[in-house]
Amino acid sequence: ALLLFRKYDIALLDIGDYL
Image (cartoon, rainbow, N blue to C red; front, side, top):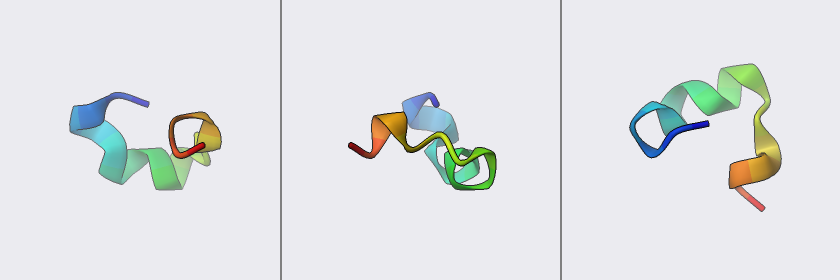
């Protein structure tokens, strides 16, 4: 869930950073 990998966060369902 890094800023550089935010595009991949969606695939990882790492919603923590979006909240």
